[in-house]
Image 1 (cartoon, rainbow, N blue to C red):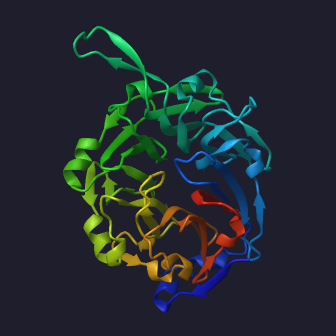
Image 2: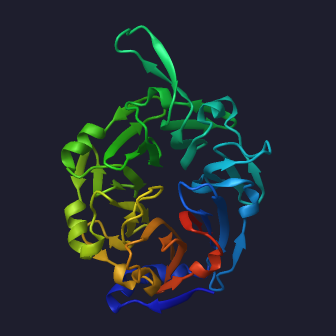
Image 3: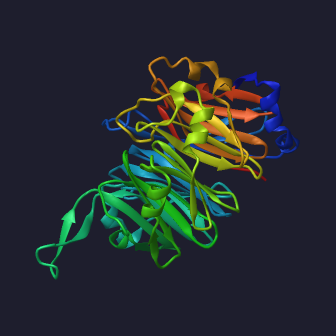
Length: 393
């Protein structure tokens, strides 16, 4: 069972409009790993958590054989696509992998077909649906054309880590990695569709990139956001609320509406406690919208060897930020070593689901009815909750 404590009266008002639908059937998928990032013994962890008051949990980790992790996932109206990386001798586990879970609970591994060979050794960090198509983003270690500056007509092929992006339609996979506006050793961590185009972004630590993709062509938005947001670094999360985008990452938060970027970093930093303010090591890792309110969370950035930062949580009503950090479960706030982070947030049926890590153990929190409920004890040996996805009825 989850354990919780009530919020202050002012914080309860933030969720008053959510409580009427709590009785509906809803669940969340919780993805992550046991073992530490950048170490050998990493094993994927995947759970199905009922969002009913009983809060039962079902361990689905056996559906992903071998070593690896769950980095992300998405829902297209009929099925989930779960993504990550894995190593296994059996043919059903590719590297990286995509696991499909349908609405009726059936599960099967997908294949990127011929495009998969280019992604060998890499990671799919995120999956996002736009109608019948999926965008997959991350980092691969395959061969990518490199043009010679000395001999312009000569194209070399080099095996190296690089930003990667592909789109699936059924079993067909188109790899767009070679035509990205910018190429670097880094990760495309985030993507989101507004129904007509995708935004995707990433980079690594102090270097950020941001692109728009209309299904055929890319637009490099990096110069525009750099001009408007001085602290722009690697993009970790992108979200859309039907009117505008919020884009967060290492050291920054920005709003993108029409063709205009607005720097929200100073306003967010004025709201957060001193030790949680964004800098070049701490990040906005996840942003989610419930129809009337944003939740944002962060700390140290995902998949970073420098796990330095303190978990924080805030809400945003499109005008003002409210700090919710002090209402997090006490175990999170007791991280005196600055070793905690919120890594992912989702919402369904009046319940916010918040995942992350604190002191080398997975963090799982529900926020319902004015209460934060600590469900971390249900995660077993999970070290990080990298991703949560929630679905209501």
